[in-house]
Image 1 (cartoon, helix red, strand yellow):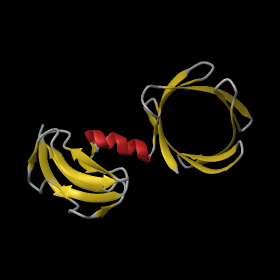
Image 2 (tube, one colour):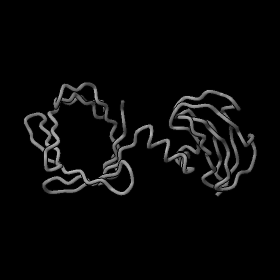
Image 3 (spheres, one colour):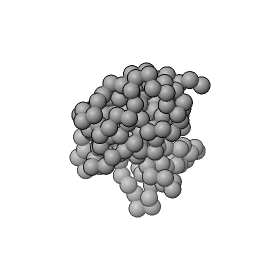
Length: 172
């Protein structure tokens, strides 16, 4: 299963292709790496790849799936963004992609109720659609004041992950 790993401002797609004990074959942004990964007794990770050795200590933050990675000379803030993390982010009303003015669900599900029509004015924080996924209902809210440009689904539709559900025109 592929996940996004955000390191500072960089986002990398990482997919575990295969694993045989400590030997991993991983794909990072389309490039395949063979690595020997060990979680050592002191809590660090020892990574051997391409004749190079790396030691990394991961310290979890209070928020799930967020870490600080310490190497010999630097530290990095990391965030693992998998399907569950996307779902939880969107439950908080952040299902809005500000670059595209769209609302989407990060995972497959079913439309419970569309609460707006094309041309409707919406206010920031107003619930515009309710989705059922993973046996839970989530309300997706308008991130800013705007007008509903297009509604791409209707009640009881089955949806795919990352499918655009509603398109907005922001009026700010």
